[in-house]
Length: 416
Image (cartoon, rainbow, N blue to C red; front, side, top):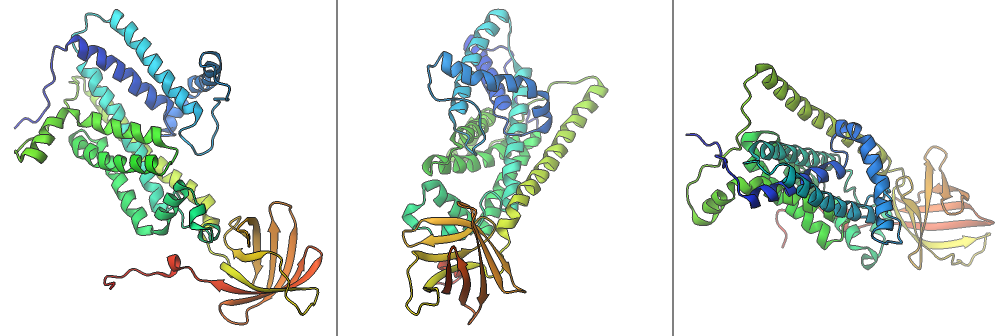
């Protein structure tokens, strides 16, 4: 049984005009919002993209009258003013390009081959993008476990994005689950598994998009585009999927026909480039995963005496009466995730080095570059005593390690 999709050989004016706009808009989006999807693409488009990045702030100032600078900057957000002006330009360029294309190519009957190559570009863009996102879940670098600063923060003080990040970060298993779900996008690399790949990726991107919108994560634009791309790939089989899922009818999914290639060398070149791209995408994704893992390595490794220590008492200058320095918790965590939490819940971040051989602790506060040296003893497993100089005072600090239910709670099959 032939399950190849039969494409129309004569398109209506509306179909041709609509396709021209979609073709230009999707290709421009993939190029401009490439998100490092392919090193070769970045290298090839380095100069034109550089010009575009300079054009965006000029356009926003001259033609949109925006006072705020729309220059590109790296902040971890994909929803900056630069991105929204870029999206507007994609729409404008696509409209202008569609008009010019319609005038020049009035006699075109159909765009079946261009339609095929557009689906190829979208498939490979989607697959590579979700491959990268999936792999970093395995290294658990996108959603690390909450730091001591976050664990000791008042629940109501966290923003919605921070709440979502901590929710994902607590569970390694859930990271693996969503990572595997994103890796199913690799099915998009192959023509015969496009529909199942797009269907599974639609569910995945819908979840990502919902999280980004409802938890105010600044990657709304990209996640929406990925969702739309999945829908676009499902269009050829949309009616069949409706018939199968909602009418209980037996259907055969159709496969997008590839252009006929008569020359063997061209066919070999096509498959060589395809599998070279797939291998490069996987290698690049793995390299990105390890590159992301390196800066998180110090955060993931727990130092000696790791924990949040509640201040029981502080005496200074050999006084017998405890004094109040406003300290609430001493946080001995990973690099730059340590510091002091005060009674008013402000945090003074710092770097704490523990020398277990000499029983010494060195605290470096990042806000004033001050360094404080203490000796320590451990009277009991959960208690700590510090003695040393804090600015101009000699202090003796008694501390008790704080336990977190979020950290100590175990998995239970049965829970009454």
